[in-house]
Each structure stands twice: as structure tokens, then as C-alpha cells.
Length: 90
Image (cartoon, rainbow, N blue to C red; front, side, top):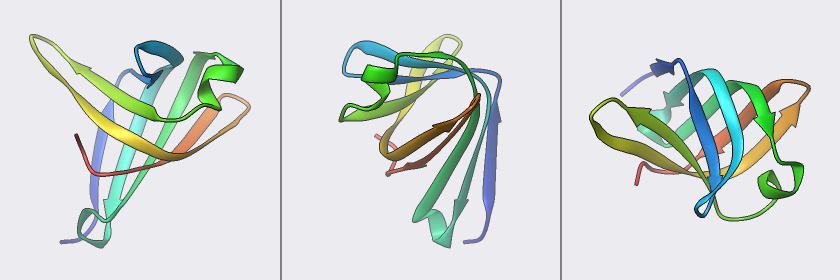
């Protein structure tokens, strides 16, 4: 399997049940048959302490359906851009 890209208008990073970051438009790219999942997103706002904690989860809400969730393996915020490596979808 090759490259796959998903996009969304908004998302969030959560630390347990607490919001750690509110995200605007995001792009998720998978390579290596889904082994490597890279997330890039615009950061609307974030809690500096919460985004440095573990475990973190990327949540993509879907209208009238259960949200999709991925564990965050690593995360960096530079200015208003978030980049993260995600684990397998939960």
C-alpha cells in the first residue's frame, strides 16, 4: 500500500478527557502501508502544559458518528503549526 492522505476542517488533541489543543484544518498522511502516520495541522489554541503530557490522542469528530482516535507518539508545535507522528487508529 502506498501513500494515503486524509484531510479535515478541525480536530483536537486530548490529554485523557482534557483538551490540550484545538486544531483547524489538518492533513494526515500515511506511508509504508500505514506504518508511518504524519499529522500536520493549524493550531487554533493550545495548553502548553497539557500538550507536553502523555498519553495524548488526536481526535477527529464526525457528525452523527463516533469520533476517530489515534494515539500521539510525538508532537511538536512551531508557531501555529502542529506536526505529530500518530500510532494505529484506536
